[in-house]
Amino acid sequence: MRIRTIRIRTSLATACLAIVFLGAAPWAKAQGVQTSAGACSATAKPADNPHIGTSTCLPIPRFVSLRADAVNLRVGPGDQYPIAWVYHRVGLPVEVLREFDVWRLVVDADGTEGWMHEATLIDTRHFVIHGSSPVTLFGSPSEQADPAAQLMPGVIGLILRCDAGADWCRVRVDHIGGWLERSAFWGTFPGEAIPAK
Image (tube, rainbow, N blue to C red):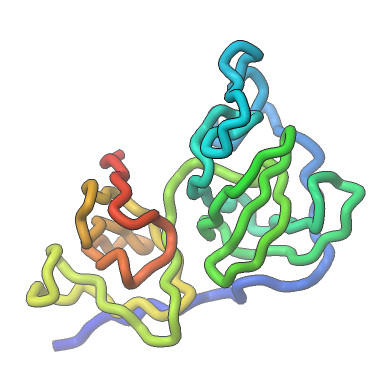
């Protein structure tokens, strides 16, 4: 039986200078960009709750994805801080750890931390294959199911659904859909429910 293999197409991160996003564009909310304007009113702001974002009132930590093909990771929350990395991976998941105005302290699958502008992030949930070995995408949530593809480390895909407490999630990579065990990828919290879109 032949199994389709999907490989990573571009590098995970490249340390070079790229476009700096200075503010949220008008299309930001329509595209699901993480924006703070009006998201957290003065009366709704959390009172020293480390699990609620101070700018958005959204849960902390949470997963988001990179919106653009060139996203700067800075050493501090502002354009005046140096760029540590430029990510060239649309859809790469990152975990938001803190908020400061329009800046988000994030960590990637490799543990690299830094600050990204909210306009470069979207709420759409993606995953990335971690580790050093390929993993199998199955046709149903079982290791005895027919394989749909082999996913190489670094492959990014869309999370379609994860049931609360389930070990398997429904995902899609390009036009290929299937099921992955949570332990095979990075982009969800253990047992987290992600409703179907």
